[in-house]
Amino acid sequence: EVQIISGISGSHLCTVEIHPFWRVRDLKAKVEELEGVEVKCQQLLVDSRILGDGELVEDLFSPDSGTCQVSLVRKDQERVRILESIAAGRSLTDLSPEHQKDREFVLAAVRSSQGRDLQ
Image (cartoon, rainbow, N blue to C red; front, side):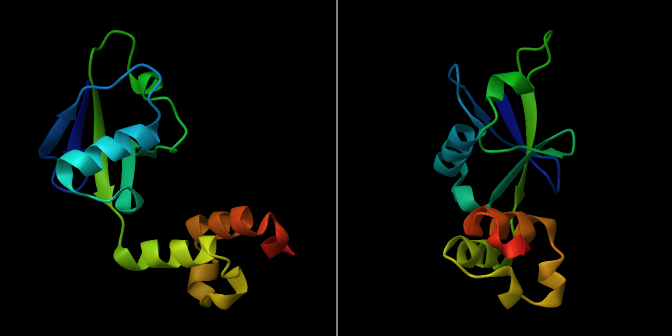
């Protein structure tokens, strides 16, 4: 099982019974169902490490533990809006200079443009 805690307060939010071969994106979907936080607004962390949607949840467990504690941080709505616009084709050059230096925005733009935004 996975215990979801608030990344800010550390308080317990919910406990999720996981299935074999679940990926982090599956865990996020369950958290949305239980806590009402949209998948696109979730950032999940284990020991301060941001989890990728494609990671296997079972790989997060320590060998001698039956549970894993995952922190949930809600993404800022403005960040979510910018990431969605990048995924829809907005170029990195259309962003503010501050946003052009943001690692998450740069990676999203590179993925969306298939590398053309690096040129």
